[in-house]
Amino acid sequence: GTPVASAVTATGLTLTWPAATDAGGSGLAGYEVTQAQVGSDALVLLNSATNTLAVTRLLPERTYRFTVRARDGAGNRSTASPVAEVTTPAAPAPDTVAPTRPGTPTASAVTATGLTLSWAASTDNVAVTGYRVYRSAAGGDTLVGSPTGTTLAVTGLTAATAYQFHVVAVDAAGNASAASAPVAVTTADPPASGGCAVTWTTSGWDSGFTANVTLTNTGTTAIDGWTLAFTFPHAGQKVGQGWSATWTQTGAAVTATSLSYNGRLAPGASTSFGFNGTHTGSNPKPAAFTLNGTPCTVS
Image 1 (spheres, rainbow, N blue to C red):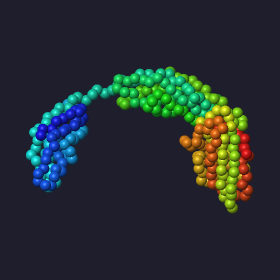
Image 2 (image 1 turned 120 degrees about the vertical axis):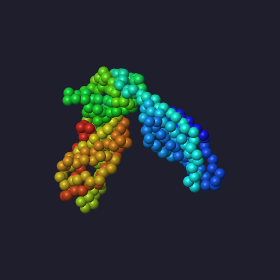
Image 3 (image 1 turned 45 degrees about the vertical axis):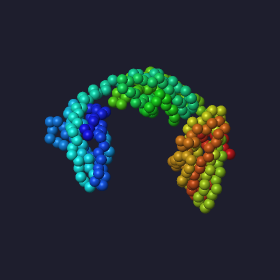
Image 4 (image 1 turned 30 degrees about the vertical axis):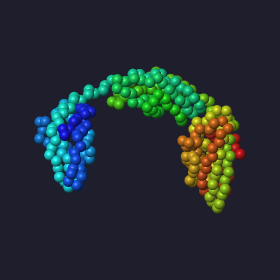
């Protein structure tokens, strides 16, 4: 039967046609669709296993002619169907309209190291595809996130520090809105001394040892993301393979930074992590620990 075109755009369409039958025993194997562009001698041969085909890579405002032949398992081909002639429409005009300006962001859940920003959504003549959130500073703006929605959790901030953020909306064509009005926010003070407690235990052999660390939030506010820092008493003490934290060592100074699953500690909550290490000579316990720059009690 004659193929029928649907979902016609400037660059593609969908062809459907009545299914063929085969009585020769080898069975219907598929279809061959011939595509010809009016005004051109080039032919394109397309294959389809079913009686429908999505045709792509067409040109706008061109006329195309399509015929279909069925093919059986033995390689026999039917006569060609009647011609279907289709003219593609003009391509849509480029989208040059930027989204509207987002609403002024507001900050909530402000802690010493993070906060959550939210803002009123932008609109667009086609669609808003996302937002870019910037932290403003004297040296220029820094992109801190690109959410598709109207909220963003910002982490890694410094306690008792003033910040300013603004938001820009973008669409699929890359058009960017005017920046929102900025929001200024100051992070909370760090927990008071004694807001954290560290328990350090080791088991050793020859020049190796395993250190297990338990960190407890003894303060009254949640900790969102932590870095525990300490200094080995002896230069020969070295961190090897660690777990449940990201470990770094520079000289005798060591830091353990939270992972995605254990960075939040509610008041009274604890988390454990550790490492296998080596030492030369004795292997004393570090005398002091700090959590995000604040001293902890040690046991």
